Image 1 (tube, one colour):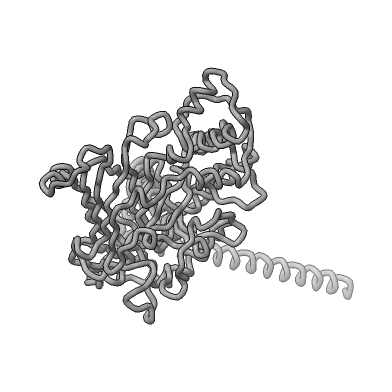
Image 2 (cartoon, helix red, strand yellow; image 1 turned 180 degrees about the vertical axis):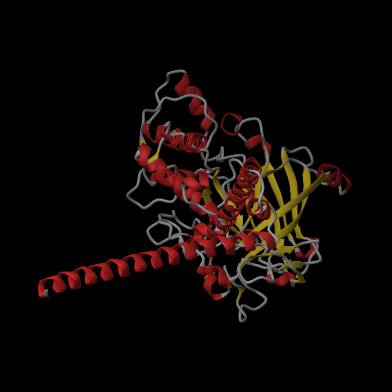
Length: 494
């Protein structure tokens, strides 16, 4: 009897445990079904009342094909939204700078007068050396002494190309001595110069060596402010008796204590009377067509005072017996200090102290491109052209090495990779810069007729006179940005 009771008790406990397990499983199943049911319910209710078009047609009781069509349309719309959002994010990451403008007046005296670089077409004085005579002697196979042959080689770099009798030679600093010894005397070129109260041409102009040979610059920065200490400069070339740091800062402009007589010189008022005037006087009979070609006169470039001028490609010409007037309009770009928190790749420009250059103390895009060209020339040819910045140990490319064609190499890279040369060289624009728009007009200069009326005897000489007057337009105005993260554009002019 006791055995039967024990068995019945065991069976009852087992059945109770099995029943409880089934009830727990059933309860869990009901809870899971309730979660998904509620989720579907809430999504359906949202789709029926939302203002987003198309969702209600998927949630309503409709045919399966109709729901599939609306589902596809919603996915396409969602994909388009994602694409546009990604495009906006990409623009923010790569171009977060917004340019905006507001106009206000700017005093004209706060704007530096531009630098003016003048290059004569005549590269040497016939009284010091006869290039064409030596050319014909060499061409006829006559003997030429070593000194004259060296000078001929030096002048061949600045004269027109005719023939090549030289091997791949490099030159030293003797080249600059030859250019200096055979140069045209500035007093034989510049008749009259004046700017405000300054009247002496030799004090207004600074000799510089650039791609057109020996030229003369007005209002340019000196070598102590443009080049680093290791860069070689011959004699007094690029020498200016002013320290720019005492008067001017490239980011902020003239200092408060700079005074009226500052450097770089500034235009105190508009008009011809307050501009820069220079008259040239030279003897066309002394020009050597074999060296200069069929052109006479001068090349002129108007540029920022802190840029190294290059006149082989960009210039306007001063023809003989003409007077040229140039009216200039300045465009100044200032950059908000808040932009420094963005990197150069995002703001698409460099501050003057952000991109260290090897040969230049301050960054400008034109100086950066010249240094890039110098570095590529040195790497390819083992020398640099005579006008490129170099230390005393770097050789000068002689004839015909000066035709290493680095510019074509850079251009081919630009074409191959579909990039700007400035991007290959990492030469972004300056965040703060000064540019000039120039309008020129010219008229005949009747000097001989004027001298005849005054009964001067010497009216039949080959000497010609030409003049140039530069003025800044009246009515200075500024366009300044009113947003924090922006570049500020200042426009000065009429």
